[in-house]
Image (cartoon, rainbow, N blue to C red):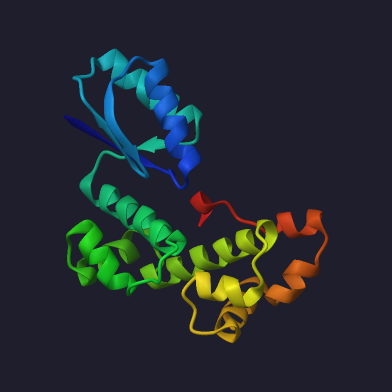
Length: 189
């Protein structure tokens, strides 16, 4: 079995796009998840090149070295943790168990490779998800705060204002065009 580590997969649509590409290329796989495709056949150099080019045309990138693979695994795990609906366990505990590596090792590598701490990256992901929930769901600010694991709506509001320059209430009140202009793609964080 071959594992393809894929950069910039951030949502279920990304998984669908990669599955579709692999199907179109006639490449058999057992599973595609955020950041990873498990291929069940040997790939010829031509198939591998077609796969790489196809992924790049979709905005993805194959990751060849182990350090970049680990950083991408941290990114996708953080996104999964942020979007998890159940009450959240501590992020460091979640990452250790999800990736099978010591949190301090992951933290040091992530900071070196990305120039940002895991905690800061997590905050940015939480704020983007809060924007999404405020734009597209029927949840109020308190419900969004609970959904994202904040200790209180005030904590969410403080962090939201620090990151965006506006409160969640102001964000909600903005017209549709302006509100969407303030969203950032998850792969851009």
